Amino acid sequence: MKVSELAQLIEAENLTPGVEEDKEISCGYTCDLLSWVMAHGCEGMAWITVQTHMNVVAVAALAEMACVVLPEGIDMPEAILQKAADEGLCVLKSPLSAYAICGRMMEKGVPEKAE
Image 1 (cartoon, rainbow, N blue to C red):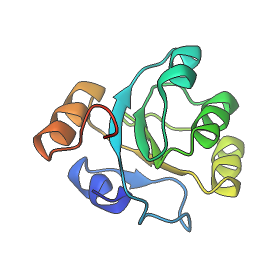
Image 2 (cartoon, helix red, strand yellow):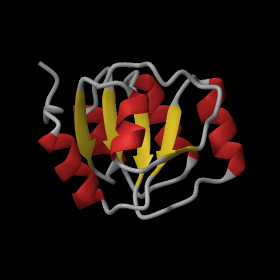
Image 3 (cartoon, one colour):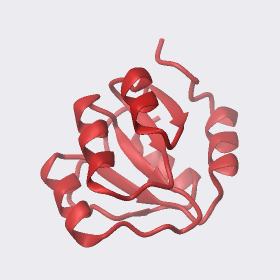
């Protein structure tokens, strides 16, 4: 699944227009503890989090994730979105809960861990 397909699936808005949405998603992950995500994050991951600070971008970029997904219509500050765009990181905002997003991803066959 590509980031653009995930955006459609979860009714998300791309908060970083101009950033490539053709990246392939290798797996999905939901966690808000940054040290835990640093230990378990991987290339191509779609990371669902309620956090919106600069360290989210740093962790996602370090792991070369496909995108960050903000559930429940959460907004991210413009300065943080600009940093994400500079890093080539797509940030999606969905009206759905993290639980519903994960459910939809699993229904479509997105694995829990990269193969």
